Image (cartoon, rainbow, N blue to C red; front, side, top):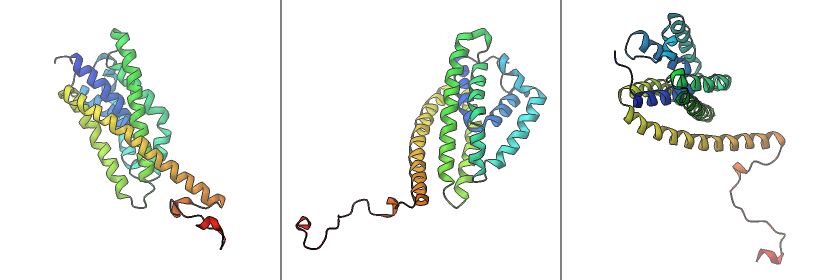
Length: 223
């Protein structure tokens, strides 16, 4: 079984970092299975993922997360808890692609992998929080299913077609930044309106954006 070449290693490190911010346990399970079944020669530092105990634990967490991520409200709570788990795990998995034999590359991979995981996690969390403001559950489930399919697709592309993955990965990063910006603006506006309502202040969201100032009858300023 041939080892991975440098473009594949770079693409795999980026994929592991990014995907960990979306579905960490699925990343661990799929990577471990690929090594256990001999589909992909895992780098030395990642071979632990192919251990049967790790496969069983990650498989159980994938089962739990699959359903937790499709319940509005619970998915946002799940994301909040996993903020402190996904990002360092993404950094560790990306660094594991190179291991101690390439310490400098491993450090760079850890920094970038953690950044990619953070970007993916924040994009996921803010977008899902915005979606949860809708009373219907179907958009939530649809977004979750897209995430379920994006992770294995990204990992496969990273190994099978690293150059194609690189192009798609850049597009995904740009989309993630745009989603963070749009979702955060929406959530900030929504929280501001809720705060104004509970404080008894008028809600500008229900008033016209521009309106004429009223003056007493006969006031020359009306002219």
